[in-house]
Image (cartoon, rainbow, N blue to C red):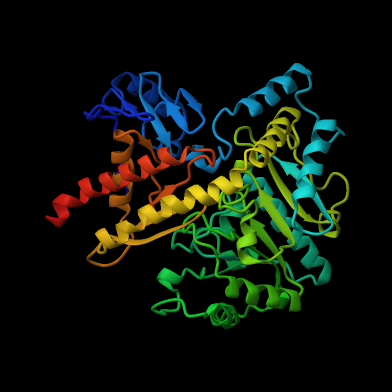
Length: 466
């Protein structure tokens, strides 16, 4: 069971005053409790899943509350602030955009939208690309699936299915939810009834087919997935496209390249499209500008969001021209997609990522952090199942010694303990710690944060191991 972050009982902390961390109050701060209680009175309880820290200011890789506390941020909001919080160049772009007194344009032509779209098309690994802008990652994922279904339906009326992977996350709306997650007894819609089909993700540390370790078995693994579909009466004639995170947010470990190659060959043979959901893992997060580069595979569509602006809501779908041109005018748009202020932030963000070489920084800093954190597996072999990561997209997977299942309670407790020590985490509720600081973070700061995580885990496990 996850740690109950709904408790608003202040706990005493040990004062912290390092170069980047400062803790001077109990957590949660007593003065913040009435504000958080008022929030809970007016918004659904689904919004209460994060630790009770009252954000007041975020700058670079630091987050502050109004009470004198300061944290090294390992969340980037929720994998948003790739260029850092409140980057001066992004702030300037937003100010200049608002000064133009043009705050909404819908689908009417605008210079701002043109500049961002041209930049995305120039960066795209997909030949002869076009791109379309939305607000949320969910919108982008929905668009990608709609495009694939429209394409498949044009081939044959039954070719409308979407294939996805168990454990993935693609958003909160209905189709995005059906494409993500795992089958649960409480699901009120049978995925197959609405042409959504899932197969296991090739998570090698916990192989869905029972192999003890990876052994160049990606092609065999994919064949196992196809056979599991066949047993359900599902063949490629019913599948329009595959949507996947090339580096999933829950594992932060890339899909094996040989599995991806087998999938791509099958897709090409059967006229099935492939869409990469890079809403979390894109824009330099994994040490590559596009996470799909780790697979040596060019998809038909790419969905971007979150780190695309490091700030305001913008998402995008990049894809082959003939695919995005299927919809006639009025069939595929978004009321606030391409908002002039938001796209100014996105364009500035991409320029910052390029000019400050943040993709390279992500790869180099992430490698240092990963090397440090991997020692946890040797220090706590009964409790640490795996430490995975690419770039600054890192996860520590904890397990219960008695049955090997994800230790949700321990992971969320470590996140809470780290917060009391000046390192900002979010609770995942899934038995792992997620480390996704801004790509611009000072390497010494993130190493300090990694040491805090180690100490937090040691503090919580010492009574257990003693």
